[in-house]
Amino acid sequence: MKALKYIFFLILIAIVALAIYIAVQPNTFSVSRTRTINAPTAVIYNNVNDYKNWASWSSWVEKDPEIKITLPKLTKGEGASYSWEDKNGFGKMETIETNTNKSINQVMQIGEYPKSYVLWTFKPNDDGSTDVTLTIEGKDLPFDFKAYNIVMGGMEKQIGPDYERSLEKLDSIVISDMQKYSIVVDKETTQHSGGFYIYNTAATSFDGFKPKMAAMLQEVIAYATNNNITMAGAPFILYHKWDEANNTIMFSCSIPTTARVVTTGESILTGQLEPFKAVKTTLNGDYNNLKEAWDKTIKAIADSGLEQDENGAYIESYLNSPINTPNPADLKTEIYIAVK
Image 1 (spheres, helix red, strand yellow):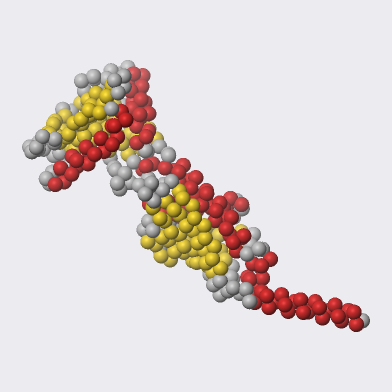
Image 2: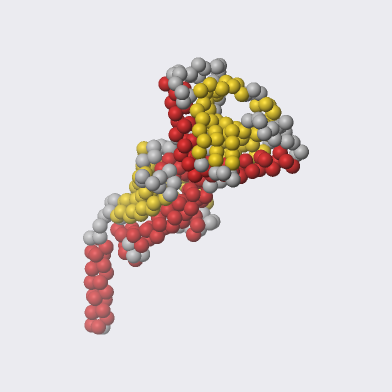
């Protein structure tokens, strides 16, 4: 009997000691993970800022595909939220503050536990990549939460790997989305309206084409802006010569105008395109896919029995710009090849 009392006394001491140990554990926690994603900051921010995208890269959804997610009408920006139900109960996430392309503050409530605070930060790098940091913090932790935390090995062990996996999946999905593109060649020919335009012209090698073209296009746009010239449409490239054998491209960077413009100086000139019959192709996506778009257009012309007008226009028209379109998948380019 004395032995049983002794054992009971030892058990009681152990329970009290454990309770004291749990009680003196920190009342707060913080877990943070960072990943560098090779994508513009705005593209990543826009993805994270909309809860509609979360299921595609959430590590918790990956582990439990049966999780039930409920989305309200407002899914992005301040006041947006989503909720979920899984085998462990209910949870809700709400966005409480956003700083465009810099940070997103959220509050998370799981069951009856105290609220946790989630912070996303986005830091652009000189090479075009972005450091994405995901942090969760909690405070005023109750006794049972701290006890569970001890048994499970701490919040770092519980949340850290899931944050790493979520950021890894976010990386993969953002890069994949940026690479999406489509090429549509119109089945019927179109009539290009032609018109007046201002332009500059150069010849260069294939390797030097992109930087040369970008600089020249900015020059002609700046000329139009500085001289209050009304643009009558999207900037375009007019190709005069494409000679792969001799590694030479001759082209003009052009801005359509509402009327003939008398230009000053030697670098910016005025031209006029007569209306012409053309096969039109639309590329939605990165400029890296332009060669494929041109090749498909030329093949479509040949397959349809049409004939290219060698003395006609070969135009590449940019309906938007990387300056205000951070995701290359959203770029839109039209190609026109004159046919007889």
